[in-house]
Length: 137
Image 1: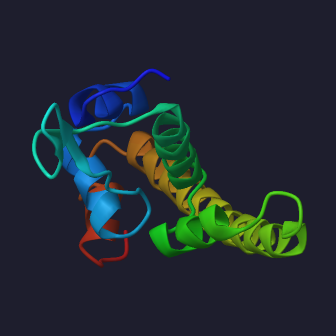
Image 2: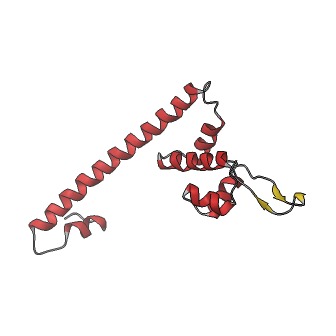
Image 3: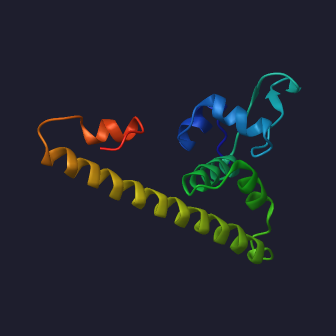
């Protein structure tokens, strides 16, 4: 088994060392014992392949928009027996993404209208600036 320091773990997971420590404090990542030639309690912590997989899982789940609490729950689910709960969490996340996408599409349409209004006039207040200041243009 290949072991690595926290710095190597962080690098392989695409995060900083402090992020790994943060995940450890939040209970998402285990904190291994310190090891040295003298035994446990001295030296540095060593991380294995399972830690790399777990860190990458956390990052992927965050990219998908899951909260740290949801990720913690996903990590605690048994891969073969807890599919129903994983589906519920995924469905909730999909619904939240759908709401966000709808909000972003509305914002995009409004900004397009403002940009078009701005391009159609060369004088007077800029419709974009006026809209952001709460004025009607």
